[in-house]
Image 1 (cartoon, rainbow, N blue to C red):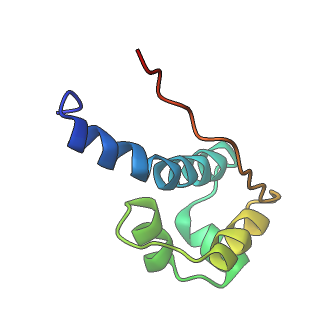
Image 2: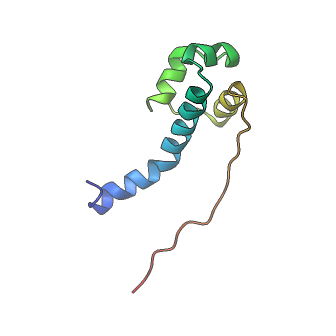
Length: 88
């Protein structure tokens, strides 16, 4: 499926969201926290945390920041140059 340029472009466009979700899950699991534990620390419902983790809810930046703090983490965002396509 990723051989198709349109599918690959869509996948690449969603990669930052997947990276955030995976980082959140990894941090929570490394700390032996359940979604319920994280909910108690953040005030975000366990259902919403589940939706974020399974990709059916797109959290706001302020919600991601609150989740990071609940995990004892600092949120760090970066703007990096886009890769340039090699022209031959």
